[in-house]
Image (cartoon, rainbow, N blue to C red; front, side, top):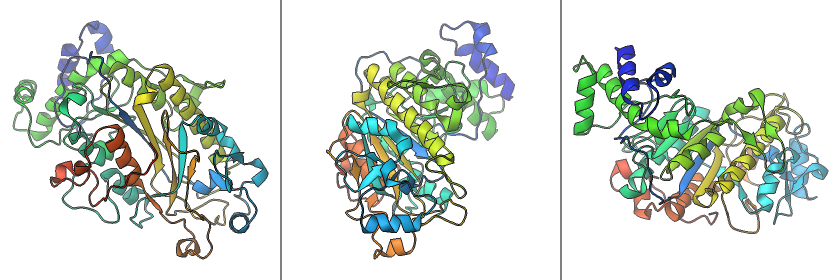
Length: 452
């Protein structure tokens, strides 16, 4: 049944492609991943553009105190040095953060400093979810579902999928309103609104899609019935529907093509196997998709490998290597967006499930903490100071610090809500909508963060 459906979908989705070329490409259709809603087959060709949110999730919990560290003599410096005799970054090595006198930036993040100097990057220290769990998976779920201190049992699906309800119908792409670039659809995009998980562009190697909507359109039902020889079999029915939706999205994805090029405007590139390191090739492919479909509203990207319990190495080890590559990719991403005229309509939020412990552990690593660090990137992220932080970060009298974790001072939802409301046009009423399917951030009292 599966092979038969794939051949049918491939044959009917060519849209000007050579049949042999199309069938020699690889198409992956699986009912274990998520898509909901209705796709249309035509490419979007209008000149109207809308703001796009790119969410970059650093899976594994990035250590904030290895990205920024005290550089000024005083109580915070003394506490930091005592807490991190092996992980500490020497103050003379730290780079200057615009508008910041107490903290400096890891020298391996020099390309992030370039972005800050240009007004295109701001850091937020003490960022996170109010829920106190330090389980990677539980906290990732809390963030992707849009929860605060407690979960809302009425709400289903991800916060980004619910946010799509708050966008006017004419402001969303007909073929691809939201996409996860990588293997599998992020939970933040799961739900009843259209979203597609794309593994690669141009070659039709993609993952799609299980319809979690309670109903299908007449056209979908007709085509699903046509393709499924066992209409009473739910698996075959969903596969047929999913295949139809993949077919309708293919013209956009094929037209976008694929790019692995990660080139820095200040010189150099990421080449060879490093291009695929932790999903970094998603950045140039995000630009390709945005150029092809100007009404693409949401993109999610995952960068893995930040769980540093052993031999963390913020200066020369594993952390330093990942930070260099991430910084390089983000600078190249901003450059690529800018030269393609897309930066002014793009906001990027880079965050993690939580931070790491203040004190290093016995194996020169750090363990699960609370408050973390986030990056907000765009054409102009506001404020002369490019580090938003508590007045005193390492306050030894603070109860959280005494428990070896940074407190969560800045609610992640406020940052994301500001992008959704101020840049993307989601109404404030949608944030706590009476309809659970449209309730973006249950229980949130919206207070603009002032970062976009």
